Length: 512
Figure 1 (cartoon, rainbow, N blue to C red):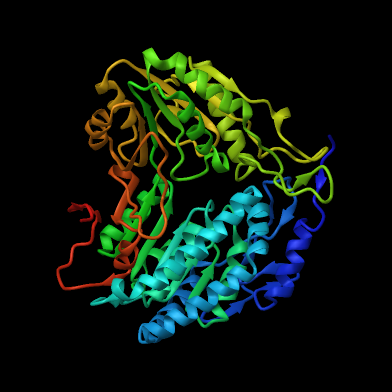
Figure 2 (spheres, helix red, strand yellow):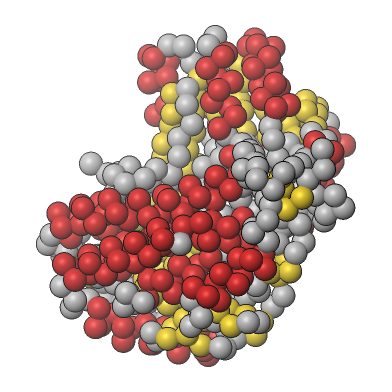
């Protein structure tokens, strides 16, 4: 079978469509920064390539700190005007922006494929979740906003690259709906064209959005520490999150910091293996490059053989490769579990960690073959990594205690409930966890002892949509919890003395 790029899906095709759809935001040779209500051809351009096959794509127009401060000051001016716009008018403008996003759904999804390597259906789902999620807020915002007012300054968003639409753009539109001007930094590793197009469609409806690119370290003073900023919303790793946390703590600034944690799936006194097999495949969505991925399985030793009987066939059946490669021109785009990792450096890093872990004693239970990937003839495949599973990685390996953010599983065997809980709590807090056990009473006893915000019984948990709340325990979350009404509460002010549900330095408060 010889594969080729499906006609009409090349990067050049997507770029031409961007130029035609939003010429104010795209020039022939670059994307523009958005601030002060208009598009600016500023910033130092950095080259970029697609993780899909090494194709050159749009790079970041990186601002310097002085320009970023100017953009923040302009956002404050927008904020002071926008906060007085009546709610009904804000709702109408956000609704119109959603209609525009829906009209250009397929182009936004195609940009996600090229920029961050999402398979086609996964990319479409990212766009749809953003649109559908914000539409839900349009129907609920009146009660959520009652008795509350916008913040004193704009909300600054610094987010990872993996969900530009359903996490970042979704949050931006809800923050604007709640009465705030909004600033976002384009993720350094990908998504600039998708976010630029989405913001261009939104600002045509006179929404107060700012989108700038640059180094997190260089722009931190403007996007985190600047006195104009009313709230900092961060999604990313613990190292960068820790630096942001230190800055906002010093300043007493409103904040929402979602950080990584080692999400675990425990198996204890369990026998329903066909059901587990069906759930396991879902955990490989987007190569586990998600904050709610499950890279660690903690398994009762006496059940290990049965677990492998369900687990290994799933790994052997995973489909990965070029998201736009087809055999015939009229074929639909392939249904893949995942495509490339975010870049070649990440694929090499994980490959090296696997090699090191095995050299130090980990047992390779499964090592997928690069030849199993569906690729174009001769294409650059440096960002692809076949699925790997390791038994008992050594304690010195990062795979033992940290989230790999890729299709690399670790399995730990335990003999007692105490060992199970210790292994599942190895990273001082997680966002999600799950326990497969036949006995409901056993689940109810174990779940409260697992340091994760959401714990599923025999099924994966996710970030959630609409009314579902989201947060984290331990080092996986700092600041206000979000999701449902809590997202609106996190970016508005209520009664004097209000304590927001969240994980703060001086208190932790769970939602009612």
